[in-house]
Amino acid sequence: MAKPSSDQFSRRAFLKGSSAVAAASAVVTSAAAQEKSAQSSQVIAGETTVSLNVNGKSMTAKVEPRTTLLDVLRYQFNLTGAKPVSSDGSSGASTVLIDNRPVEAAVTLALSAVGKNIQTVESLAGDAVPKAFMQYDASQCGFCTPGFVVAVRAFLNRNPNATEEQIRAGLNGNICRCGTYANILQAAISIAKGGQNG
Ligand code: FES
Image (cartoon, rainbow, N blue to C red; front, side, top):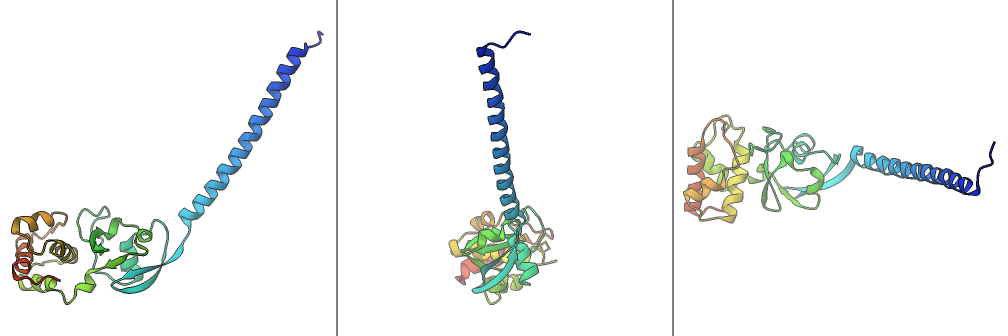
């Protein structure tokens, strides 16, 4: 049997060496990936305790990264005004204010609200908006009402002298299955005209 040339030797040695390096790299990469994956899954699966500022109070909640603000408000803080009508937030029934901006709590992660001012419909108990809703009979089943109340308050805070047309456009993110739009609109218009904002 012919003795391998030094060239064959060196190529074979190189290939073997390369394989070993590649294998070692793969092991290292795999180990690093597994470690990274393990860290990620710890973060994804982990529960953590956070403080949320809700209606002027600091409240403690246990949340996972996937926990929605709506779930925390309803099931940990017992603030059940915001409603779980649509999981994609398209109904507007879960509207709350975060730093004075209306957002859908159903599609807002609780962790993203840490350090911000969260305001729910419960904080508007003495506000002109729910009073106007009562005055104008702007509620039937009531499921959409808390979201509308918060949305009207948010809109009028920014547009205190809004016209009917502007109010209609400003509230188009909220849906009322019972069809009380005309009364809701009248309630909002009465506030804009009467200067009862704030
Ligand atoms: S009052 Fe029933 S959905 Fe609006």
